[in-house]
Length: 134
Figure 1 (cartoon, helix red, strand yellow):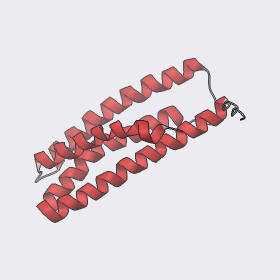
Figure 2 (cartoon, rainbow, N blue to C red):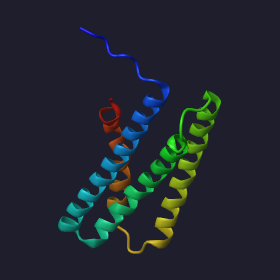
Figure 3 (cartoon, rainbow, N blue to C red):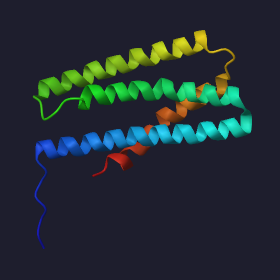
Figure 4 (cartoon, rainbow, N blue to C red):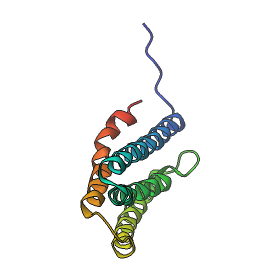
């Protein structure tokens, strides 16, 4: 029985990048399917409110993934840590701005559906260990 050789740093980075972007795709797909359920069961306002709530979580997640994995090749640990801090700070600011804009500009709005979309997009992170496994 042979033991598989460990992945190189570049191979590991590529695998993790692929897994993170696959997770984002799954997160978007789940949000689309549930928004269609909202459309059928509760109408247009609830459906777009759900989409806006999910978007307020998903867009910052895409930004975070881009900040962390948007570089080609490996980088020094100091640069990776800096990318995580900048990505997380940007993610928090983007979430606040998007939610503020939704409350200011989207009229009428089904608040329950909005928070359901936002909450389910956040809770979908519980699926990430399954998606990030190699």
